[in-house]
Length: 94
Figure 1 (spheres, rainbow, N blue to C red):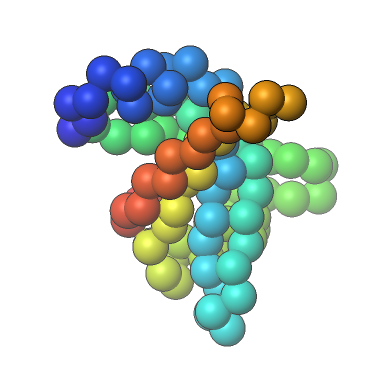
Figure 2: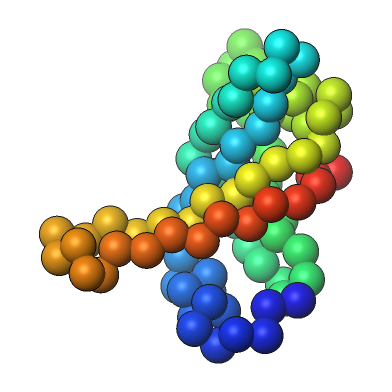
């Protein structure tokens, strides 16, 4: 659970993040995702991306099934570099 108000504000404000997984050859795979945080867990929707792809065939889903260790990167870019920030959350996906 996040207790720090500053980090909670950043997470609540975020509209997109990047999810990093690792494949069976230990190669990283990172994709942009939307998410919801309920103060305990991050929920990332999985849906069909094209008519040819089923959710269980998505690389990130296959990677999580093989290795549940993931990282979620929430960041904000700003032309004023003093305003740049990122938060990396590491955990296990299911």
